[in-house]
Structures are given as structure tokens and as C-alpha cells.
Image (tube, rainbow, N blue to C red; front, side, top):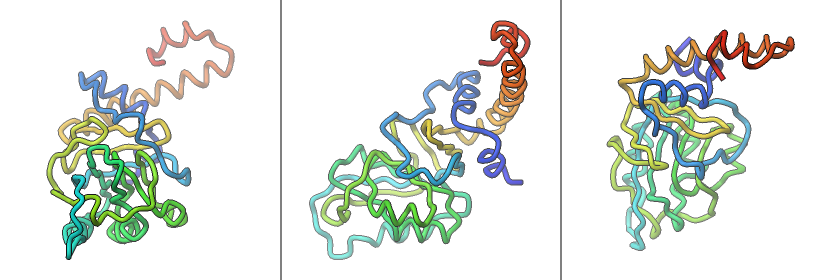
Length: 216
């Protein structure tokens, strides 16, 4: 089983956030305004494929060349992460880009901006986390300025190859150099949580269970 499959099946954002806290990295959760746009999935994990947009009112003759290049460069197990600077005029992601991303093996997409074609994306089963929905084209509203470089999305710095984990609670960014240590701590914490849960279900007092396992 791959690491991202293990995370999707056995871990979740809260335990990863706790594990990062214990490693001294307490600002790795994206802002609460980034939400799942549909609910046909639980936990999604993959490696960051970064894209940055800026607002622009210029209508270009060939507006999508950079977007096509960025999407065609997506690799298997990627989580597309798009920084828009909290744009309220542009919707840089839609169903056709989602379809292309799925064909490349992408696990999902996260953006601090709008998405469109949401029902078609839901039918596709592709996980997308965004600030909202707006049925507008990007040409004349936004321009792709870079891909494959460090960005800031949801007020968290994201570099290519960072581990991105998202579920209904939110989106966590695990820096690449902390992946092994974070997953090790998360696995241990989940084991303690499972043991605690079973004893609590049998009527044990929370104070006794916490003293025994040290997780809450």
C-alpha cells in the first residue's frame, strides 16, 4: 500500500495537525474558508503540484497556454494546490481541468479561490476544496503566473512535493522533510485513540483513559 493510500484509509487531518504541533509546526492548517465542494469522499492525500494565479482584466489572445502546460505536468498522486490571492473574480478550476487531472493520476485539488462546474466535478468523483463557486471563465479575470514553485494558499506556505491531506475538517500541509516523522507520530496517536475509544465505550472514565494512553 502506498503512503497516500495508507493516509486516506487510516489517518485524518486532525491527527496530522496534532502530530505537526508536537513537532513544533503549529501553522500547517489552511484557513477555514477552504471547504470541500462536494461530499463524495472522506480523506484525500497527495503531493503538492503548485500553481499560482493573479487577477487580471486583460483578455488574452492565447489565454490558456500556461494552464495547459501546468495541468499536463501533473504527476500521479498529486494534489493540485492553486493560490489565487483570495480572488473573488476568477474561477481558475473546472470540470475539464479536473478530468485532465484525473487522467494524470491526481488525487484532488485545493485552492484559495473559486471553482466552477461543481456538479460535473462531483459526478467525476474528483475531490476539490475551494473558497466557493462561480460560473466564470478565467480569461480576462485571472492569469497563471507560475507553477511548480512555492506558493501561499490558505495562509500556509506550500512547496512542490509537500504532503497535502484534506477532509471535511480542513486541509493540512506537511512539509516534505517532515513527512516521515509526522506519519510516524500520527500512526502512534491513532492507535492510542482507538484503544481509548474502546475503553470509553465500555464505560471507563475519561480521566483514567487519558492517564493510560495520553491522547484526547
